[in-house]
Image (tube, rainbow, N blue to C red; front, side, top):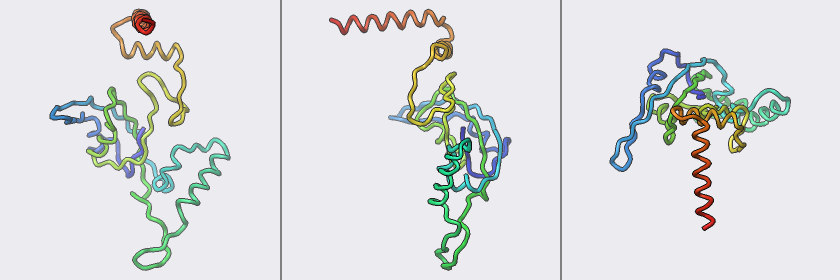
Length: 188
């Protein structure tokens, strides 16, 4: 999921250009990435989120989160700021008049900062980037840096997504054989 600064309609040229593949040049070699699938979610106006990107991941589910958001607001966003030019107190600047655009992008191979590069090439100011899935595995409510074990169902989905031409049981059998070979090599 992306949160872009400014109002960008679904048929905007900049949004459509996110689907065009990138070309990377490294060491004199050219690498082509796959294009992205873009789903325009909505445009909305929220001056708080437009200026305070630290609040985007905070949910309003519990009162504790609302208190946390208020503390961040108090720290980062004063009600007024002093103008450098005139010295008088004015309201703080809200970029793009508070408009934000929420977009979902699906890519099949995640090259180094690919989505950030796509947004930069399209001239779209990226405010927030959130990964919601790794292939068929949904991340749900995991926080950044959190680790968990995969369930058997998730492993099956992953094998089917990565090895569609092979049966899952065959892939597991080959993996078990490879692990057994590695164990026996370590014992020697």
